[in-house]
Length: 50
Image 1 (cartoon, rainbow, N blue to C red):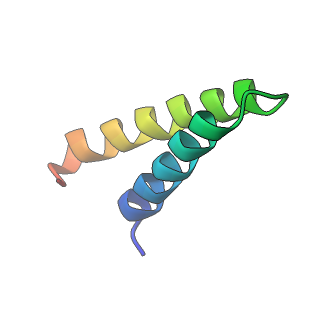
Image 2 (image 1 turned 90 degrees about the vertical axis):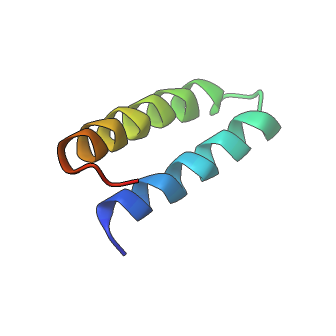
Image 3 (image 1 turned 180 degrees about the horizontal axis):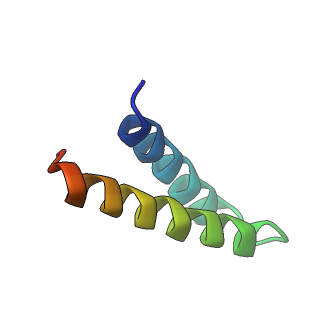
């Protein structure tokens, strides 16, 4: 599994968790989601991976 695929999987996971969880982990999931999106954007921008 490439890092891009791994990040896409993580993003899906965090999006699902944010939709279901409004408790203590919400802020942590939100932070992790933003970090994963940022990393994915950097990787895909540099290599034009879709």
